[in-house]
Image 1 (cartoon, rainbow, N blue to C red):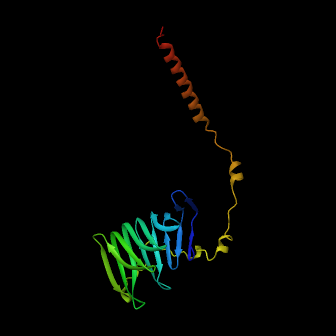
Image 2 (image 1 turned 90 degrees about the vertical axis):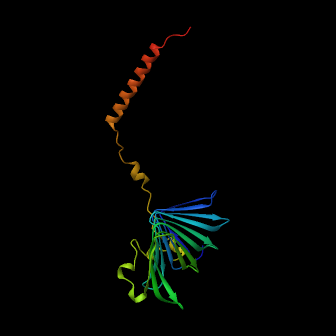
Image 3 (image 1 turned 90 degrees about the horizontal axis):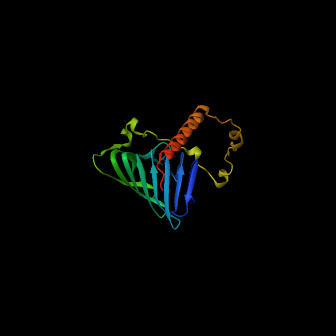
Length: 220
């Protein structure tokens, strides 16, 4: 979709189920938002994006200005989309967030939260509000009093250098040559001891079967 980019090492699309799967270092960018995880599954209906499941170490970063990023992480995440824009995000397990609050367009406070699970609601690609399940630890600091250790969540990595800037750039990326011929020339192991043990086991099985057949009474 226009305005969004994505990269990964391996991707497949199931036309029957309308599921797109991204594996190995997948990252998705949209405007000022970056989504990453170990694997990402998208479901669509009639060409419209409906949900996105981010498994294992999911992380969402939203660039607020040149030095600040709102951040959300957890064990797993499920995003819900309306008109191809993120409407709601459910974070499951060890959820953490840092998001900046604006007053008349200017950042003035920051909310730092931890909870077992949380639900984040979006409006115009910005965090609108956050709902916690239970046992939440949530603090709001004036911007100038934000603790230094709470500016970046563990795992935060803004990877703008991997983001494709144009369609043409996709075709300029380096493609590694096939190593099939090289690997086919490798001398494969013969496993002589294992093969001998298999032969002994086979001979023993044939011998036992022959003895069993000899011992069976004949039927007239």
